[in-house]
Length: 421
Image (cartoon, rainbow, N blue to C red):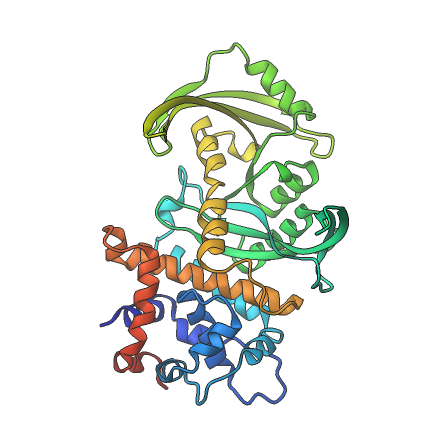
């Protein structure tokens, strides 16, 4: 069985991908090309790391691509954009939900837990900055640009922002959902919409807690998270916050509550705990703060010579009362696990899945593009990390694995039985 046949067999057997993709609808009144071949082409384009509708349309010139996806004739890039504007976004989200729920049912998310708790990381990312194209959902900012004559001029830049929710683990990661931040809207408002939808669609017990950066360390937001039924850990950075100052003052000169070697991050870690601190007027409850001091040696090669430099950093996290029974090391792990959404989602999607490309600048089409990117990203990553022995044993890179999937299209006879009918 060739590599693409292996992937499709895995996706069908584990996630019932064919059935799920057939459930995606669009609002075209008189569709000449059925929705399923178009959606399958879009998802397959993510798996093979195709970055635009124009390139995807070129792929449909391949007879074997059409045979696999069920297209009678080649299609143009305008069809993909036209369909994307009319796709049912809730149907697309259901595919993400189905993938994540299947993983949990199969106990594949157990390795992502920290002391029995399943954590979701929240963070926002910015996409599609432009000074010429805009849509009703574009945020705006003024930036200075350097003209050819050397003069600076202020222009309006348009861009989109989205909040992502992801489960991170040492073995694999899965993006649960994303939500657009509307023009002039606070990031926390979009995050609460996302969490409210997650509670409704995933259920209140699908995960146990959230980990967020300092932007979310605001009383009203954290109160809302608790009302939704989840515990939280948030980074403390703002030096103007009284809780930050008090935690620093009360832990200085005190013996750390624990010290250990973090083998994964190769750091010596000391942790302090300060209990019963008033967080803010908008929160109204006392919180526990965990402060870490981390030391390590950084090795660099400069001018052909290896140089070692000692490094030191400090972090502070505030935690909700629901986590009072968990040790400081759990808070430390959860706080740093949040970086997975940067390293294992935004960076991967940007470098290899063309996250910053906007093929159709229209609100529904953009969100459909992102949801399909995330769906394909999840499926490929899970196939490689959970099923792909070649990658796990270090015999092939993820990039080479994607190329093998593309080359496998030539063996069309092995693919036909998987997607016929």
